[in-house]
Length: 218
Image (cartoon, rainbow, N blue to C red; front, side, top):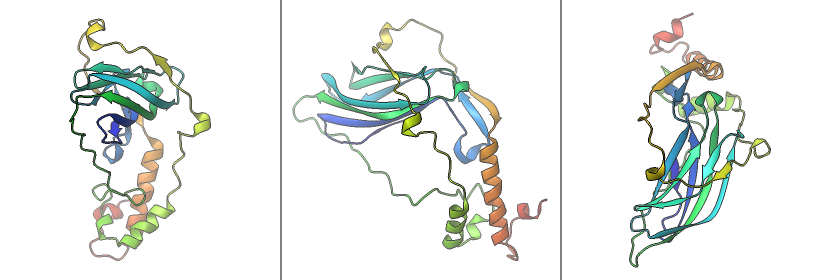
């Protein structure tokens, strides 16, 4: 994922996050793997004739990851991130700032600010009965949840290797990658968290005639 943080056509900063594994949010209790060990990001800037890297700051949880130099391509630039095997659960995140050479009069790209959020969101489709609770009850459940241990602490993170940019046209030909969804082991911590939330929802709905059937299960 790459998010452009500025709209200036001559200068842009990108927040970048890359990994090839995940648990699909509330859609799954298993770890899912993307069988690809590298990801290429296209950073658009229509009409760009040159690009210069101003600054970069990337962090990773593995010594095998690498982030390439930035390369100019048609209508923008590309940067490649090597992650290694998805079973290793590596990731890279950080920020990249670029200076562009563009023709006079080039219009800036539209950048929309994300909507503000108030803490972690409890998905209504995931927890039957949660739609019957008041905002205060939902907030109470959120406050009761243990903090998620951070795996992004500065002192635990490494700087990924910096490698040359290789244009796609110069890369060795290889069979097309099959981007399958390989299901891995059960995410036990995530499952326990979801069971705890559902248990609290059912507890708060005790005596409610619309209490969902799942609350009657042992």
